[in-house]
Image (cartoon, rainbow, N blue to C red; front, side, top):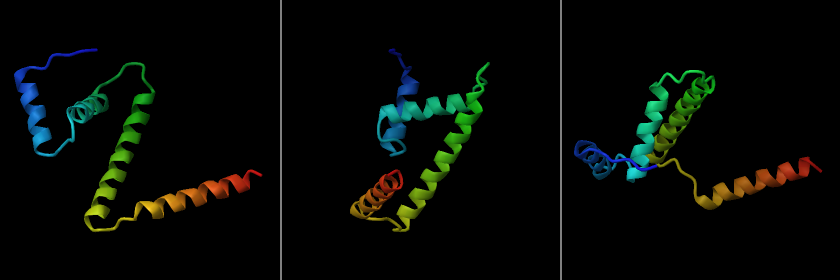
Length: 96
């Protein structure tokens, strides 16, 4: 699908990207579409409320992670990978 944006819409998106609100045009448009899904009354869609709940929970987790990173509460990638490997190994051993 291709769409044509108005000059005003293009300026809004470019400004958001320049301000660092979004890393790319695709991310900005995706955020706009997610907001549309959140606010739209989709007839016959029982999953829309579940999706919105999931979206809210995910946003809260991302905000928490950002706050932790700003405070320096981060782990090195190797530590995280080692923890994940250990979980996978434990899961494999439990299924034997």
